[in-house]
Amino acid sequence: MSFVLGSKPLTLAVLRSIALDGPALALAPEARTAVAASARTVETIAASGKPAYGINTGFGRLSQTRIPPHELEQLQKNIVLSHAAGVGAPLGDEVVRLVLALKAASLARGASGVRVETVEALLRLYNERLYPRIPAQGSVGASGDLAPLAHLALALMGIGEVRLADPLRLAPKEGLALLNGTQVSTALALAGLFAIENVFAAATAAGALSVDAAAGSDTPFDPRIHALRGHAAQSEIAACYQSLLTGSEIRRSHLENDPRVQDPYSLRCQPQVMGACLEQMRYAARILEIEANGVTDNPLVFADTGEVLSGGNFHAEPVALVCDALAVAIAEIGALSERRIALLIDTSLSGLPPFLVEHGGVNSGFMVPQVTAAALASENKSLAHPASVDSLPTSANQEDHVSMATFAARRLSDMARNSAGIVAIELLAAAQGIDFRAPLRTSPALQPVHALVRSRVAFYDHDRYFAPDIEAIRELVEAGALRRFVPGLLPSG
Image 1: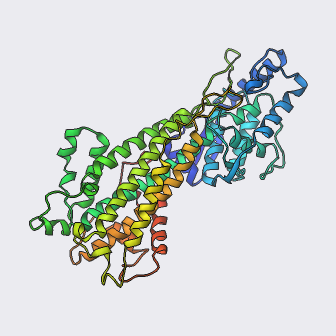
Image 2: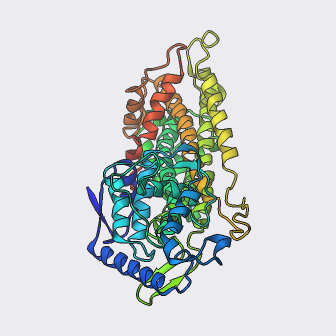
Image 3: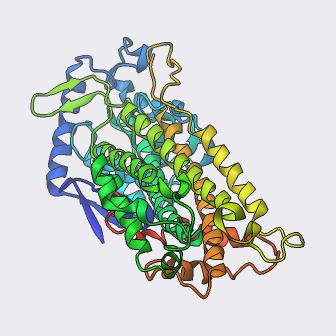
């Protein structure tokens, strides 16, 4: 697979492929024309001596300082060097791939004043899999992701941990154009969204398996209930649960003999909770897809009129707000899963052996894995605190309101990993419960879910080293192995 930038918009499916696989990228002929025209506009302005922000002036509060023509190249080099002040662990390869692709796509729109060779240099890094070392911390998500993008630009200049045989010399405006933009925040947000999709799929399958393990009812998934409320995602996910549970021998055996009238909320209200989370994921996906195709540096160059306009497209508030929503959603997905684990190990609620193990007392079974799930859920609740409301002015109050989008996005992968651990424990617990219901069988649609768990982890017949079991199933969750059980529901397909 390959993709030509500038010929058509980047879709979520393409962005997910870039993150996972790194398909080849090229620049469309029409994009080359637009980029070249934009670069000529900058050359004209620089030659005229007319002041234009970031071309022949200083930056931020130093924008009143005029830069003489013989220092324009040094100006662009200096902004990269001075702004490469990030700290922390480096971003993962999947995020760096997205950053490179998003930055190239933004510049390819022809509104940034950079040369064609600058865009091609970015694509060369991407296509040759030469990933710059970009520290994860140091951006407030306004004026763009300045520090992390500066570390990317260092690689183009032959400085830093990735060096090129032919370093790029920056022309007027190019240093600023490379640094300004929301590509790091957006890349982190997209990586987080894709990870959350995998957890959502696994949590849906696990939730259905838990219903059957607990001999619960499928009545709460009746489409008539959800049609009366009117939320589309709620109805869609309810239909998914109903499809997964159809034909269960366990359910049929309990229809006439079960005295319970209603199941606990963690079983019964899954469509309402997971549907609401799915709505937030879809909204976030729409915003991030728009952002991925946008131009977010400053100032912007309009070659058709020869104007350079200063604005604020670098402000990452759209990214920050949807990341806050995604953080709440993934925290809720994990919290609901943890409650189902607690239900399954409680014999008074599930009707299964205490802590899902035979010979309790000698064996502790799933006692402490539920504690682990609770710890992960609690950690996610702390991480779900909104980041976008925490604005700290920077640059001597020139940048007096910032989005904190970079942190808002960066925490999503950690939260998704926490919830993947919770869902992994639930899958193990639910599979254990299904085994205890034998010889009755779960539904035809859920038998492959059970088989997938058992392909990695055997029945827990006595106490053993538990952590490897959890890690084995978490790997399945994070790899997206359960996406096929929620066809048509996930934003990126």
